Structure formats: C-alpha cells, structure tokens
Image 1: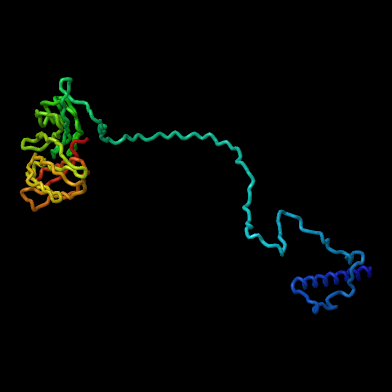
Image 2: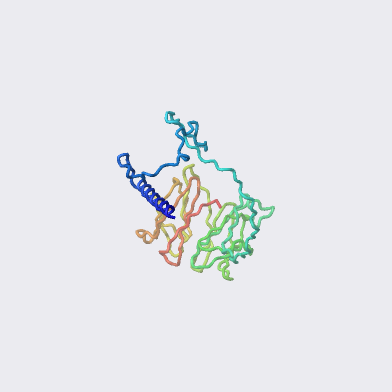
Length: 328
C-alpha cells in the first residue's frame, strides 16, 4: 500500500518535470551552456530494450518518390528556353442533355397599318408607251406636268377626258409621257370641280405643261424643253418665271444675269461650267432687294431649268425649283 503510493508520487513528479522541459523547448531554444544537470531528473533513464540502435542510419539510396516533379541538381544549368507548359485538361465532351421542347409563345403582332405613302411609277426606258397613238401616227412627243399654282389642293390631270395623273401637289413634277402628235384637250380637276379645260398642240419634241395661277383662277402654259449644245465639262442653264404674283424677276448666277424675266417666259439656255453656284432672285421692280438666295449644283452635259414660283399669293413670297430637262 505504502510502496504503491510512493510510485504514484514519483510518476507524477516525473510527468511534471517532463512537461516543464518540453514547454521550455517549445518557447526558448536551449544552448549547450543552458543545459545543466538540474534540467533533468537524475533518476531518469531510457529502457535499454527501447534504446536506439547505434548502428542505425538512413538508407543512402532512399529518395523521394517521383510525383512527376523533376528537381534539377544544384550544379545543373537551367535551360534558357525552358518554359512551363500550360495544363492540359482532359477531353470532356459535353453531356448529352436534350434541350426541352419549348415552343415560342404565340404573340400576335399589333395591327399597325403602314403609313399612306405615295407610290411612284417605275422608270420605263425608251421607247415608252404612247398615249392616244395609233399605227398611222408614228411621230411622237413627250410631255410632263408641273403644278406651279399656289393656294390649291392636289389636282387630277385629264387628257381627252381620260385621267392620266392624280394627286399632283404643289410644286410637284411628273415624268415625261409620250403622246401622239396633234391637238389634245387637257383638263385640271380638283375637289370635284374642273378649274381649267384647254386644247393645246403637242409636237414631236419634249415639253413641260405647267399649271399656273392667273387672273381668272388657273391656266395652262406649255414650255418647250429644247436641246442645248455643250462641251463635255459644261451644263446648260435657263430660267422660267411662273411666279404670277411677283411679275418680272431678276436672277443672278455667278457673273451671268437673267434680268426682267416676264411671267410665263423661259429664257434661252446659257452654257456654263459644271459645279455649284449661288443664285440670287429679286423682283425687277425692286432689283436692290434680294428676295431669295440659294445654292444649286450642275453636272456636266446636263440641261437644267430653274423655275421661279410663288409659295403663297404674295409678291415677295418667292421660291425656286431646279429640274433637269429631257430626263425623267
């Protein structure tokens, strides 16, 4: 009983001493000068049966297992062209997952009508169909219509009691249309009312028939679209005055002047270098007052007419319309 208690006490003391020693090693590294006999238990000894074999040594042939990591030796030169290869991922195909059958929802489109836009007739190259032509009339002329009348709604044009153009607004111009040579009756109708009916002779050339303001309301006037000799770099230019409320007008184009152009008059053509020009328009009664300044452009070997119009029933309400003659 007494011997057993003694052993227990000695074991407890030994355990405390070992614990203190280990704590000391963990916190403060001991040098050989710090190690004294007081640091160890004088009665502590290693069991000779568990002592380390003095002949034990690490196997000199032992090496770390190869885990695909090559460690060069210290005296081996590093290859300057060495580079780390990017990782190669395994070829993993996408799983075969069928997409669900999802039909598009039935969404009805709203009923949005297209805007009412005028449909222009397609360009028809020559020879064009001839209106009112028969086998005995081989000579043909070509005419077009210009609405130069301000203050009215759109017109419908009749030739020999047959409608040929409709919804002709100010200041619109139609395409050339071939008609038989001779006299034809032209009528301008609008809002169920016939404004003017007039018989006119159509020759074998080309012409523009203009609807104009007059003292009696409306009238028709024919402007012959004649040819003009020109060089390869030049264009032909003239002025036609259809401004009823303004009287005679003056038009200046560069250093070329068209003075005192009377109402319904078309000047002779002038050959000019192609390019851009600044146009000045004034009334002949007041030439010092410029009513309109605009810029026009002319291409070589083209024939142009500059129409002077009234945009409302006023002598100073001037506007211009530049058109190319003898072409659609």
